[in-house]
Length: 352
Length: 169
Image 1 (tube, rainbow over the protein chains, first blue to last red):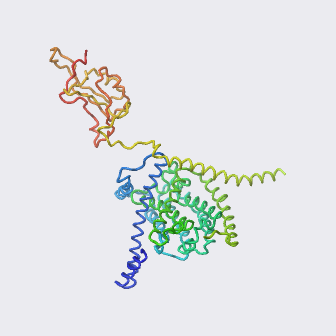
Image 2: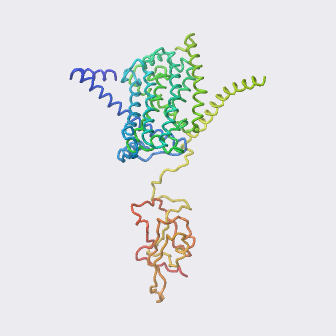
Image 3: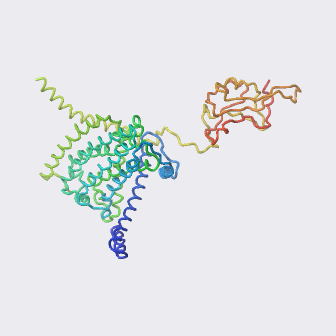
């Protein structure tokens, strides 16, 4: 159904104007849809984080703006829009203003390749996973630029920590995804979903896939700089880390991008391990539109898992973070990769 | 052979570290998970009180100092200034003079204004303890913010109010 709607719009646009103009118009429409989704998802995730945090800490959370506090984050966003954009005199103005866009554009780029449901994917590139891995490591440039150009030592320390952390954990994210690619034999996300029609990859790959998923969740949490690994923002020692000197909408960009990154990490996990938009046991296979529901449901379960991590675990020191990555996750990951290769070679995967 | 034992033990330590780590993380998650599931029963914070009219604050609540008046616009303050003396930071000022008492025909000390600076008050309650006639009490109001600090200086006795009969005996 969704497919026919998009196809109709596509044909209507191309019949209306010359091909070049039509494709540009089409891209603009898609970009607007994704930007809207981006903003709504970001605001919703912030609200979800606050409510869930409250419930974990036996509080009630924001519940006064709108029904059960649904409009709380919208009110916050309006407040941030109306705020003055301050900056330091000695900041490197060009880089200082550029940094938030770096962060937010990389988050948006990653969003474009996610398969939300059948044929509802803005950009089905044949190296999808490679693209995602590459894009997710560009985001750290924005953070480094922000910290460097703020000309504030706390910002710089926070940004440097972010660099160390992201570059280290990048490796584990990529390797754990590669473990799964061994099973699918393709990097294209739509093909990966196709493979999972015989059972989700976490079931197909059983033990090594579960280990890969655990490593992916740890490394993914570290990549988004969330609490067990939030040395970047370390409120107790660095003020607010790299975005100390930002205010108003520029701060909001960092804040939203952080939550969207969490959503992206969860979406990749959904796509690669839990069958993306495929329903469990194919119960709603005849209605492709429900794929969006399944995709979002799975994603939010994983997002909830990350929030659960945040409100359970104490923070790590920088040396502990690097020990965890280089002495534990990486060797386990490499062994796991070999185990998975053997399993695929011997055909020991579970197929339905 | 000691070095061999050590290295084997260390190798074992590597895997037992991983096991212990995962185990302790799962224990932590199960504890927070239990709290999450029981947030409704065990909520330790309260909803902001919307029912301002019917709300009865708890016994020891300290919001602001008030002077209760009865239906004849009479209060119990004799102007003895005990509260003014008891106040450690000068939040209370009493302006008084000697006026003619209508009943006895004598001149008597009476309050003109009982001024209470809420902005300076630390809610220590010494004035209320010091008051010999229970003229001032803790109020029920908990929303004390105002848009200008001049609103924090309050005259507690209402205009035209008198001393209640029988308080001084």
